[in-house]
Length: 335
Image (cartoon, rainbow, N blue to C red; front, side, top):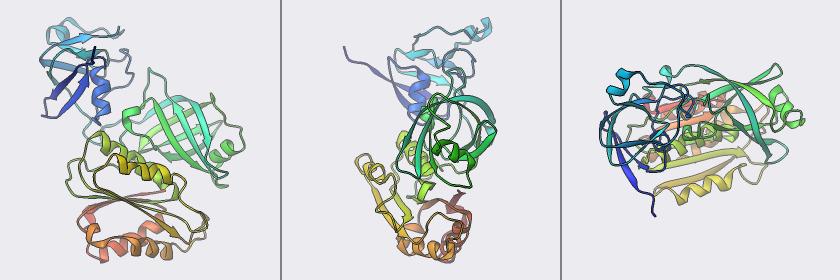
């Protein structure tokens, strides 16, 4: 028997589709909606909504107790109910990054995958009772035995229980040294505090989107691009990835190329630059190398998202603004 798919209409006129076997919360998150929730298992009551039209069914038990008034008002938990017809619901969404509280969560390392001697892909898992609420492009602080570092989240908010981080082996980063010395392993507990940062998508913009990453700056770019997938945004996407010319390609080159299969208008270009990840790079020279590689006809009519070291951002921003880019089109995050 096929799994029926129903349409969910929100009070703000947004729509998304949800299979009959999935909770309404799961369906909304998968489509990129910033729904208020914490636990996803019926404990906290944060994901409450009101049924306006249609039919829903409770698909799992919840410990959170709705009051008689809430039940009479047709309120329900989206994490524990699925649609049984096309429905219309009243649901409050997160307005912007300022409305997301800073959370402190005890997470556990699910796995660590070493891409090479210098890059590790670290996956953390949150408890079901305390899933991280964040927006694509934001970052968090991770701490282990008193060692603290701040990293951008590389995964999409639609997978809030499993968080991915791309961590470079740097002597100045003590947290990374815990990973590369193998002291920090799978199943270890890591405290997470966040989210932080304003590097988020302009979801209502119809302009082309240009993403520019310096090396590990790919992490928040990946989160943004995959969030755009979830939202089914049709904006043309241009991705430029700067990496050291001494290496054959960026560390996740195949992954970036794979986006061609899921986007109608996706343009990907790598930029081999003269930098070695040290603090002694000629950032003006690197910024000029990146700037010279861009399609400037596209740039000036697009929203630009740049993730790079602060000094590179300053020089690259000056080049772009001098060439006619409006400051409102520039969204940047230093790494």
